[in-house]
Length: 470
Image (tube, rainbow, N blue to C red; front, side, top):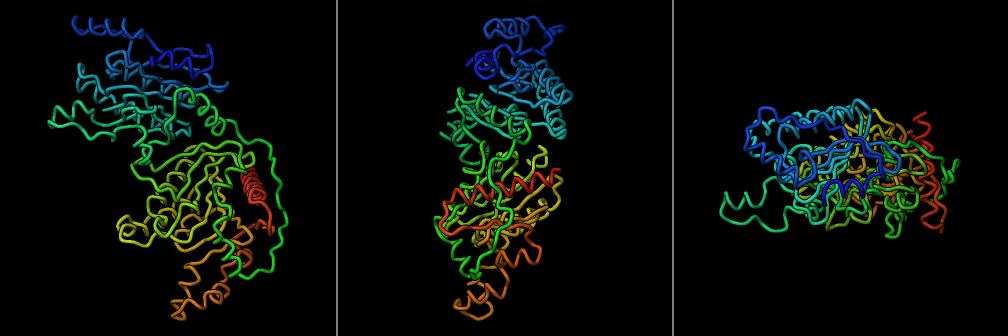
C-alpha cells in the first residue's frame, strides 16, 4: 500500500501536516541524482520517508512513514536526517510518536555514510522514550536490515502487517551469500508474534482503532469509576486449607476475567521483545474501572504440570514493569500461581535470578504500584510480583513459600499434614492482613458469578490507585 493511502486510512481526514524540508541534492553526482529523480517520480514522494504531525481520533501524534516505492524504502543520509529531525521535534512538542516502516534497510548507493546514521535515529528515539513519551511502531512488508535493527525494533508497542517479511537479513541476500534459500516461515509477522518479538499482527483497516485504544490509555487519563467497591469485606469462617482448595478449583476467576469484566479498554502485549514468550504471563495496557495502567498477571489457566511458569514469563513481567515506569502508568501485578517451574530448563534459564530481578525491579518503581493476590500465591514465583505500595488479596487467596503439601513433606515426611501446615504457616488472607503483608481484602460471596467478584476486585484496585496517585 502506498504510504499516502495508508495515512489516509489511519489518520483523521485532513489532519496531516508535513514537517519535511525539500531534499538538498547539492553535490550529488549526475547519475545518482537521476536515480533519485526517477524514484521520486515513480513513488510520488521526494524521499523514502515522510514525516509530520496528525491526529488519530482527535489525539495529536507525530508520524514517520516509509514509502517503499522510493528505492525500496531505503534509508540514505537525507532520509535519516529527516527521521532524526522528526523524532527530535516530537520530543520537543511532547507528542506520541507513531512510525510505519517498509524498507529494505540502509541505502547501498550511499554506503557507510548512510549506515552510521542509524545510530543517530536510535539515539533520538532513546531520548524520546526517556522523556516519558510513547513510541508505537507498525512494521509493513518488507522491513529488513538496518531499519529493522534500529528504529523498527525500539518501540514500546510493535505490530506487524499480516504476512509481512520482517527480518534482519533479506532472504535474497542470504541465498546469494550462502547458496541456499533461507528457511521458509521464519521472517514473518506471525512467527515473530508467536516468539514474542512483536506484540500483534494487525490488518491495515484495524490500525486506527488500535491507535485509538492505545492512545486513550496513554494520554487521556482516568475516567469515572463504574464498578462497586466492597469497602468493608468480612472474612468468613473458612480454614486456610478450605480457602486453598477453593483457589484450586478449575472454574475460579483469574487475571483474564479480571481484565475482561473490570476494564473497558484492553491492548494485549506479547512476549519480551527479544524472542521469548510464555503464555503463563499476561501483559496488557488496560483501564481498570477507569484507571489506565499496565497489568502483569499470572494466568492460572495457562499454568499446568506440563507447562509451569518459567523464566520467560518473569522476563515478560519485567517488560511490563519497565513499560509502566517509562510511560508513567501505574503497575498492577496479579499473583495467581501454584509455583514457578522446577526443571533443568528453568534452572538453565535463570529462574532464581529472574525472581530476584523482578523483586528488585518492582520494589524500586517510582510509579504507583498495586499487587493483587488473586488466588494461589505459591513460592518464589508469587514473591517475584508481590512488592507494591499496596497489596490487595481476595478473601480466599493465600501466600506461602511452598505448597502446604511440600511444607508437610519437609516437616512431617508426608503430605497428610498439609492442612495443619497451612494453619501453622499463617498463609491465609486473614493472617496476611493481620500481619500487614496485605492492606485490603475483597470479600468472596459463595455462589456469586465470577464477573461480580472480579468487578469488585477491579473497583478496589482502581480505588487504591486513585488514592496513591492523589
